[in-house]
Length: 294
Image (tube, rainbow, N blue to C red; front, top):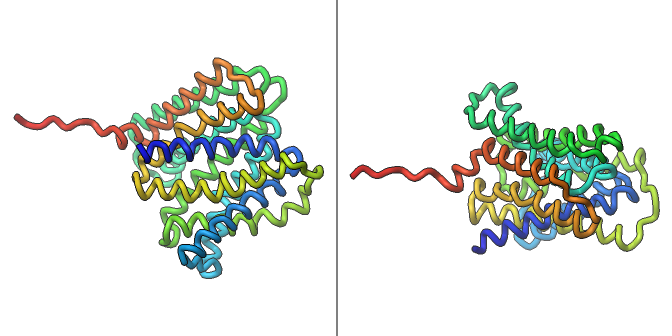
């Protein structure tokens, strides 16, 4: 029960990240917003590392942290911050779940890994879900939001690249991967502030959103996630993927008055069903029973 509540809490926090970005992106612009996000997240983990007496050795592994920071945080976060200025927070939270599909394509076409039929079926459900989500939304079509949609899918592709990269990355604790990744991201995003400066002076609402995004949705969320991996295992912790869109849709509806259409519900179901098949999560959490010989 404790593990389940942890998953729900993490999903609620990560689902809220799209709400916070929606509030702040238009005022701060993508670069300033994401610089504060990763910097506040890094400072949060630095405080935890100080208490736990964990040495990061950033300069020793600077190349690794910059590569990981690029693909795992800097690039996808910037793309999401760009897209959220046009797309609903709820739509972004659903599209965020497409990262496993890119992981499959990388495995098959780049790494030449054999793939089961169920995985391809899952990709089919995922594609159908995305088409249902955005293809039946007249608002998206009217606003010409295809470029932000493509940016969002590129962000999830970046997550998949980061995931594959970590399999060959230097061996260290998951906490240090997360911590160093955020400092690497902060260094990479910093120069873009000069090209994409702050647009308006932020009010208290925007400042609160930035603090929540950086400390809560990045720093605290990473700590909670790795605690769940430790307590439940990676496969069970991955089930948070199914809950994030639920909260993304809920927060968008409650706080931003975003409409929940039939295509939103159907599209999210198809995407999450596809994620289940692609990751094999349903078999990892609910393994088939083995018949005992009598």
